[in-house]
Length: 339
Image (cartoon, rainbow, N blue to C red; front, side, top):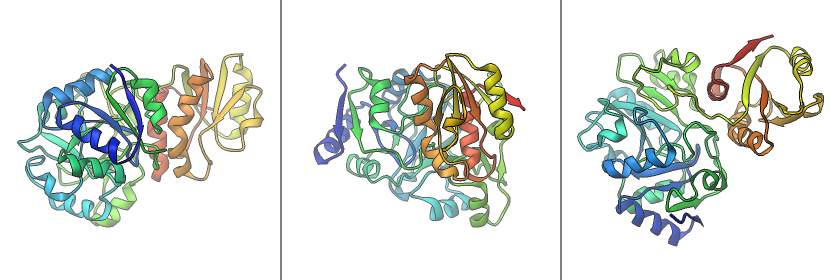
């Protein structure tokens, strides 16, 4: 299959809409990462997403809409908490898990009785939804397990020959996938952290929002999950990544004791010259939004540099930094050393 990589314009968006209506899948930009989109009601189209990514089919997908009316049939009800969260954070990088409606195919929901829905703020994504009239399922447009794509070129490296079209809309703004919150019970539960934080949602809802234990611990292989990004090793470069928890001095001493020609460091801005091994920065130590924006591109850079062993500086575990930490521990397969 020939994969077209086209700049976002009227003609390429029209082509994307045509392909979606024909049951094909296309890669498009969103404000989080690039997504691989297919009609959420078309089981055969959604199967193509799993095939292109090499994604396990028990890992549910997120549905993307452009207005609240599109929820009809996608969900069976819109609970009060969902309405409040949507009012404050949609369009934006928040996925809300609600009871599943009759229009959604089993493949989108991995057979669950719930579905995650979000309304992207990216204008290109919204235009494609509006013009095609299709609410689409869209996981990140990368090979399963690899770092998520934040540029069209990232997508091309993974998906060339696997999909018909990639729409180039520039670099993703947030850089990490949406926050996923379940409102199926009395207390909302964050299943995947993102740039919409626990504190932000608690302020809107006026109640406690819990963080699922799986966010930091992962889940057992035989467990069902209601959100992407929970069950499997994710976001991983080819290198063996280990997170080192401790201050900078202890970090540098540990790396020095383990250094080899294939060793790299994943560090914060300004620290690159402190090591005898090559270093790649993933953002400002005191700016979690910059870490979120740069993390996946930094992980992909490690692949381009042919890194085999990587020691990573550990971010904070609060606010937006929790999203960064969540992605980083999965890229490391939960290998963490306390210094």
